[in-house]
Image 1 (cartoon, rainbow, N blue to C red):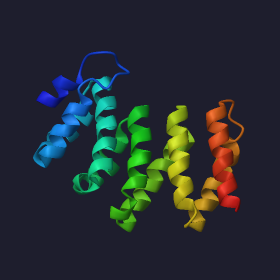
Image 2 (cartoon, rainbow, N blue to C red; image 1 turned 45 degrees about the vertical axis):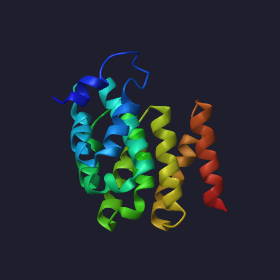
Image 3 (cartoon, rainbow, N blue to C red; image 1 turned 90 degrees about the horizontal axis):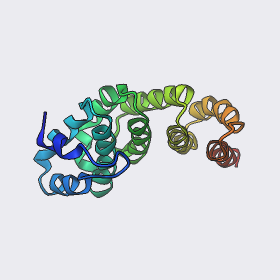
Image 4 (cartoon, rainbow, N blue to C red; image 1 turned 120 degrees about the vertical axis):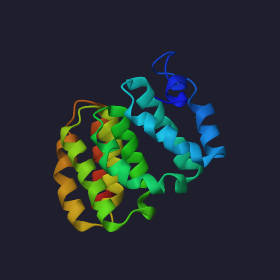
Length: 174
């Protein structure tokens, strides 16, 4: 595949490897973003994890680089069944909300709703609750949908999940 993919492989799976250096290259030359984005479709789980981390870094530095790819995040990347990709999407969707069209935001909500119902990973659940909870403050129909999900998750045996659900419930009830 790409030079980026080769550079993102190897090392300890929980390390960033060459992610930061590659992000710096992409930020200096936006034409490299497509090559970096294509690494999401690597067969290597570690590469996909590092791409997700890199996307958050790029988004924080320059959101506009990701905007032309919103539809691909919503269609192609959303199909990737990997926790690190799912929790990153929840974070990216929140950060990119101002760039989304109404149909894109509805698609993002549908993706996150599905992840909230089906995911088992605690980070996916927490990040997804955060984004949906933030959006629900301004959207009554989403709040009505989210409320029973938060009630369910407030009883989760994992303190981080239950605590996040309780905190978001409290903000919605105020």
